[in-house]
Length: 141
Image 1 (cartoon, one colour):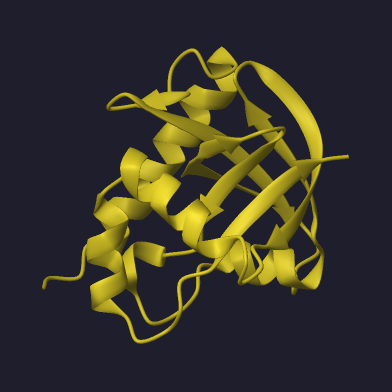
Image 2 (cartoon, one colour):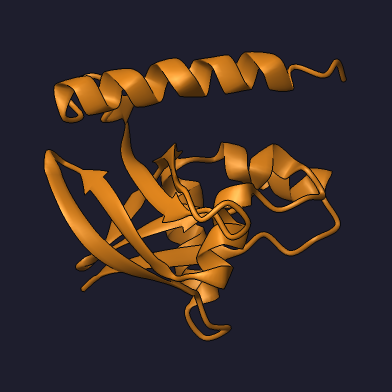
């Protein structure tokens, strides 16, 4: 598979810009799927970092998946949340403070089924990696 990380990085920059500029009217949905903009604090830099992510609502929380497109390395945003679980999210035209937590083993089957029903591509990502793909709940504070 060719290395297209540069293209993904460019798409992310444009997506993030449009999402912020329009408060999610552009970029808040992608191919019918709900998106959120996650702001974390860099674990090394201490600087704010933003990334658009697919999400699935679950009650008052939002589910995000730390798949990194099936790469064996976890995404930087997940490493940042592990170091500091407090975050800001923009979703559905709102900006909220949230706290991240990994789904427990009793929740995982239900949440994974819910995510796959909305975004079946995650099943493919799961086959590309040997690491367990974390299911993260962003809960409003």
